[in-house]
Every structure is written in structure tokens, then in C-alpha cells.
Length: 281
Image (cartoon, rainbow, N blue to C red; front, top):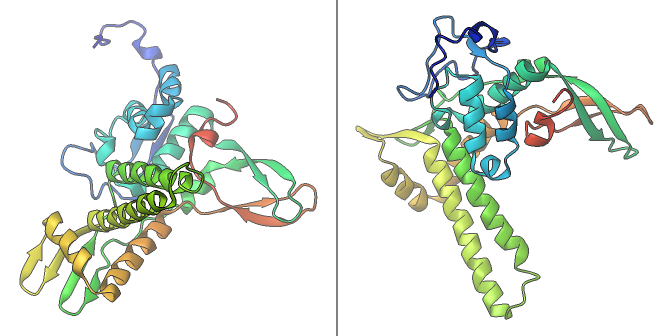
């Protein structure tokens, strides 16, 4: 690595453009994964030209490495983005987008009434203000069981997304595949079983510990066995709680008005690569 401490151009290097408070407030990071400032405001630097190239790499986006590299570059206080709780991800990406290109972003949407395409400037600061942190301190009590939850890490969330993508791709290709019907059914059965296994895995990852009477269970294999063998009502209650946390941390829809029919409507908003590089990029 090049030593820049004696570089006479160092004072011209990029500087923090904004400062960010994490929704998690630094909770759920393992030791060494986050360098939290005393004031809990993380400096956010604009992306470099190399960061932009990195973020446009298709394979890197799919496996998450591009996102991790850009976060390391632009929010260096997050030492290990793989271990970042997933509830912080959208906030961090939006902050990097603001630091790099400003708080306004061109946003394209289709009117559900007349199906006209509409472009408008979205203020990302208002999106940030609406992001909330689910209350993971709220336990689920079932009989003498007390179940404690936690957010997925970015590594876990990204790995689960990749696994789900591959399984969904298999399910989509089966109907048109040139193979005997029984073989299609066998592949479909296997894909559905795998999907169920992925759900059990995700639920297990979202549980930090279970108190069962005087026992405190943190072993992931024991928790996974419990989910597999639990009564369906118990399984459904755990899944509903995890889905509640997921929905609470999802980016809220944005409001738009159609230029043609003037109808006001809401539309989903996600921080993906297509809108990350909007106007100004």
C-alpha cells in the first residue's frame, strides 16, 4: 500500500461530505467491526472513480463484494461491512449516494392509473428520515420459552438472497425444460425442499438466543433443530415476528404525482444499482 502521509497533495484528497447516524446506533456489530465515534456520527466520503467502477461490476454486485468494497472506501469507520447488521445497509448506501452526487436523485415511475412514465426529483434526505430501526428488544414468549431476535448481518442477508435467486431460477426454468415429466417433478420437489431449508436457516440466523426455563440456548444447530421440529403454531409465530422486523426496516414507498392525469400515488423505492447511479453520476 502506498504511503500517503508525506504526499504534498494530501490536503486535496476527498473529505467527508456528510455525517451519518446509524439506525442500529452501533448495536449488533461484533467487536472490531465498527469504529464508532464518540458523537456516534460516522463521516461519509464521496465515491472515487475506482469506487464507481467497482460498484458497476456485475459479479461483485451479485456476491456482495462490490458493496463491501465501496462501504469500506466511503465509510471507513465500518471496518467490516460483511458484519454490519442489514438494517443499516440502506441508510449507508443512501448516505454514500448523497455524499457523492447530492441529495436529489432522478426517479422514474409509472402511474398506476394511466400508465404514463413520470420522472421527478426525489430528496433522499426525506427517505433517510423515514428509515426506522425495529425493536429487537421485544421478545417472543411462548409458554416457558422466551425467544430473542437480532438482525441478519449483511453477509447472511446477501448469502440468503443469492441462494434464493438460484433456487427461484431453477423453479422458473422447469416448465420449459426438455425432460421427462417425472424428472421435472423430482427437480421441483428438490427445489421446494431447498426453499424450505433456506427459510429455516434464515429464521435461525434471526434468533440470538432462546431461554427455556433455566436453560439459555445460543447454539445455532440446537436452535435450527428446534425450528424444524416445533409445532406449526410456534413456527408460524417465529416467522411472523421475523417478517414484522423485516417489514419495519424496509424502505418506505415514495409519493408521486402523475404529470398526465395528476393522480397522486405511492410507488416502491429500493436502493439498487439502477438508481444508485442516477443523475449526477
